[in-house]
Picture 1 (tube, rainbow, N blue to C red):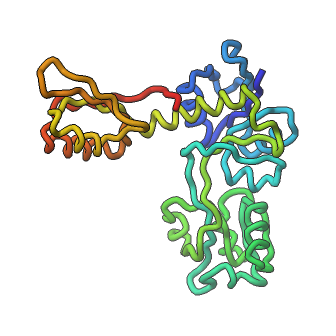
Picture 2 (picture 1 turned 45 degrees about the horizontal axis):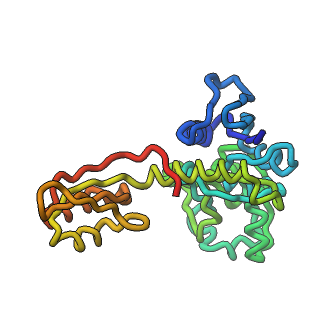
Length: 282
């Protein structure tokens, strides 16, 4: 039975459970449940603190896990990313009072406060910058005001909270994070149950990205229409009862669907429909 770690709370928890449900897996009904078994799919889920998941997976006690890329790197665990999941995206950056620093090279001899000591230590080492790092849990913006550090490193979304604290972001992003599937470094990459799990999640990702588009068009416009809707391999084309017309079906990117529908209509296509895709295998 495949043993999988899932975030039990925070911004990763809800979207992870939703994706697993869409992939056909049972999920817990109450937040107090720490473990459930899905016998039909031969999977056992363990609901753990997101920050601990990489440690559990690296120990080999659990086969794979879902956590944030930032938490994986910060943990220093012997685990690796095998599939990005596209949710819980965030950017990790430096910030300080205006005029203090403009680039990471300016941090030599300074102290950086952060909740992600592992990420910052690694980034500074990679850049060859000799700076001190102090670990704080949450609300690192106050570290500068209280004189604990000259610089902070934290997740930045809109930057509003930093500006409200009189700070400004500087330099290139330290890293960009999102939810990822991880496994122990060196684990069997071709293990059938793991591959099946990854295919299911990839199917959900594709289903969320594409819609199915159906339309009718005249034969003489077919090549232009197909150029707009090439599909993944090629579209399905079927003759209609009315001579000179065909029905076309193809997957198209969801974010481009409205524009494609407009272009098809201008070509003379009619009965243009889009349908959500709930699951797929490519």
